[in-house]
Image (cartoon, rainbow, N blue to C red; front, top):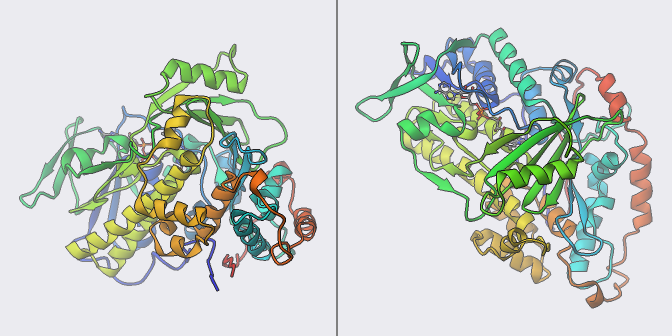
Length: 535
Ligand SMILES: Cc1cc2nc3c(=O)[nH]c(=O)nc-3n(C[C@H](O)[C@H](O)[C@H](O)COP(=O)(O)OP(=O)(O)OC[C@H]3O[C@@H](n4cnc5c(N)ncnc54)[C@H](O)[C@@H]3O)c2cc1C
């Protein structure tokens, strides 16, 4: 029997807090940068360390703005707020936030019947249908003419289709591990306020210089305002600038440019109607893809593209056409992206978090998860007083595996595309810069074998769980051509789609309209741990 949980990392509200003293030699921590990474890290560190007498200061430049994009999350953001005992009813309205059931991918595949699919967040209800999904997918890969598109098997896809919120009422026992959409600037301001309330100190100052000690570690940073700040630990949250991890420590950077071509984006907001969707939509365009993220106040939209294939002007025009905003007087923001990761996220006495440590294009909205995991994992090492060379190696290895597994999942969106309309899409499909793990996974799939054990054993599983891999491969329609399919055997056709439809339809009716749910966000309740199995 193959058993797989839907998620690789379990969230435990008890971690990041114990009564042990802070490790000797860690009395002052200086975080450089006040974007989402800086404030999330400040709050995660503060929760564990302030009561142990550690002083945490966040230093932010008065002249460099935050990146101000990044408006979708994975379900793990819920664990972040829960661990800080911050209620949805408090932070969501303050950040114009909405619930997210998952991501709709539109126009990535041209295979008939697979032009659109949904990558769902998991639900306990999926325990009842996941087995049937995997069974049908594997039978279809082996030539049986069975229904195997993911959307009919997952409650989150249905909730999104009906614009319902993934919030079950008190008397309905099935939890959904949902994500959020939010205004990035408001979230930054909210976290800033919360961090100050919890004892983090704040200072304005533009860093111009870092001094190293004789061991090559950071001794101090100096600001344009004439101050020199020392600390025991430095956290680099300075964004793509990588002031400490890159400019001061010269930590090598591993570029993912040969795997993932996109390196630029343009963003434009648009009005939102009364009825608010509960999914992100990712639509494939000529040289990349457009995001559409619903907030309570507006849609956030953007086009992520490759500057090798498309100019900034052409990208803006295509996005405006896509949004029907050709004549609208709404300014666009153009951004550059550096895709890859540093080799050592924790290097000497410096931890890099957020864009400073690396970035994978935002197709699955994973950046905040990296921030959260990097900071939370670092706290675990601090809590144990595990700060030596060998601990750093282990820490960096874990973060790197998470990066590689996530990269490979993102690569799969491009590698499996069948669009022929531009050189961009053809080059992506033809790209042979694939990790060995990814090559193994594709060969198993093409040979009609289960990919579950390989995902579990490989780095791939460190990025995405088994059901996500089945969802993407099936959602993109990676099956034998329709004409080549044969009638299923009785054993292959043993699951009734009608039963699944009825079950999910009945369940769906218990979840509220999204807009209504946003008007009445209930206080937190004891949430059961979400574990979903198939076997
Ligand atoms: C197009 C795009 C879309 C994205 N979409 C998503 C998404 O949907 N979901 C998701 O999770 N993530 C997304 N991200 C990533 C997300 O935006 C970032 O991970 C997140 O905002 C954290 O950024 P940061 O705090 O690392 O950097 P920034 O926001 O750039 O903050 C850098 C900070 O460093 C400070 N600083 C810089 N230089 C100095 C200096 N010399 N002295 C002192 N301070 C300095 C700045 O003042 C600022 O406060 C997206 C990114 C891009 C580019």
